[in-house]
Length: 252
Image 1 (cartoon, rainbow, N blue to C red):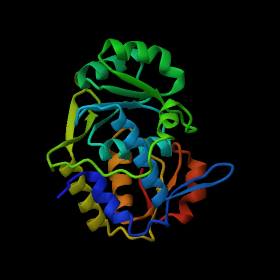
Image 2 (image 1 turned 90 degrees about the horizontal axis):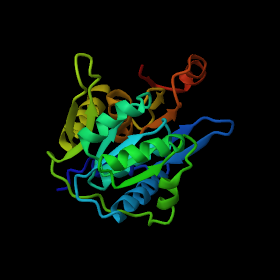
Image 3 (image 1 turned 45 degrees about the horizontal axis):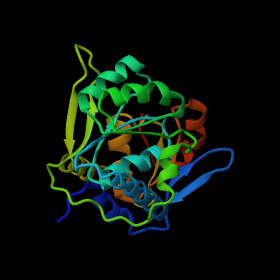
Image 4 (image 1 turned 30 degrees about the vertical axis):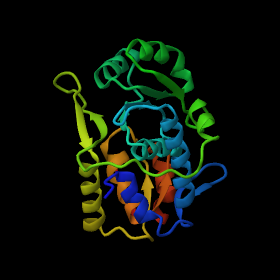
């Protein structure tokens, strides 16, 4: 049995492949179906596997919140790699610590930070640096665009590492909390069951996705439930009030 977290959530949400997975409100609203989400993550996962990284390699990500960043997270899981999100507010000096501590082989960052971060990343042992911006532009998606839209999730055991989330470091250096596929799937299944997520539920997502609540608690439960997410780039009171009547779940 494959215990890859992505394989588990995919089995659940692909029971309704043409349903809307994510709504991104803009001047023109953009919808992504679960099938489109699955195909996009397959292309990204194939792009990562093309790099021939050893299983369990770390992929560090310091990008603004976007649907594409969520797709990248799911693709990293799908490819059997380890996702390491880095707070977007950290300075270059602060980011250096995470690169040296987690030892990622891949770094994904915004184009505006590429020059300075790439130099530091290569000094820290990173092999590949790609860009991904809030509007979906950047070298990462350019490379993924030529990849196949099908991908078999990498076989994982429950205790295989899925993500490293760094603590806030209130009383010292941040520490990397190592979370396995089994950890995250157990948490997601409990949330889905206890909160009784259904296909008709709609999550208003206004949290950041560089830490536990926005990335794991919110997204995993919605994906397992086959539920739609209204995807806001950040918390804005007026936007939240505008879309709250459409939602059945809101987290803050």
